[in-house]
Image (cartoon, rainbow, N blue to C red; front, side):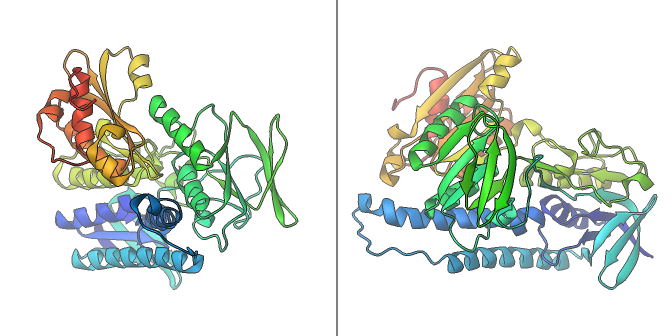
Length: 461
């Protein structure tokens, strides 16, 4: 039996980062994953390939629609989808190979196969060549999540599928129906809309991007409609099936919709099947998420869990922070994640970046706050980029001026939100952001101006 200080089940963002950090701390670390390519869902069929496709599809769209504004004339723009998909795969391959190299550099032992807990301090790895037994002082579960579905939807892994299939359609659909208007649905819907598909989005709620600041989401909704998205809000999907060479999507109170492909994007559920949780008594909640305390410890001694499998914000970077904090707690007794300063990004055009509390959450909690808003239309760099849609919104405590939330809809919001996250992590006030000198002309000035606007003293608006 191979002995390790820490055995990590899952090599996604949480698992592989935890493995590297644990090794840096001097622990003997093993990481188990049944895929040849490391990086988990995020790297293989999620965050990374979707961003590659978003970037490529945006360049294609801009070449056809936006370059003329800059005085650039392009004739005969064509789409080589095979080459675009190949580039996406190359990006993924390069990054997964990088994780392999990092494991070797940090002396992390990698086991390929299915990891299963087999009683206290014992993990089995079922691989192609048989079963390997591991002994573990500590076991860390980082198995992530899988796509959810809805009753009546017949997933066939091709015409009716999840984000995995939507990243590799062999042809541009004539008509794509997206079920669910969350992050994933809007991003992948954007990819195929830009490449020429008609995209219809069905959302059960009366809004898109559930959980996001409502004002920001509503403004994004208007912009997405201008881009050509067709939305049906308050739509309860009751079924989806392949019928001949078409797909049929049924909804309550409306006519069935016929289309070429269906993307089911209605959330994710924890991946715990076959983990052997029952052999050590790891408790889960009614939705299947593993229950942990403030130190990521489960109900079983020596067994920890992080990332999507414990719920909360299902984001790769949240899992990474939890993985680092968890192994630091194991090795040193100290580790911490500030859940109030974890950003979220929607990589549409314009992008949406958000961190902290929404206006709705503050109102519901009875927190008095002040709001500062600055539109990108008044920002010099945004004008030069010809990307002036959207705005920055800063929410600060009415008494202390501490920043409680920042919501950005606009160009490169995913990068701009980092400043807000750092500011909030250090307990900054809107005055702190406003007093900091920002280079001119940059998009970041919009955040400074929104911080100034909290106190009613924006300079350029």
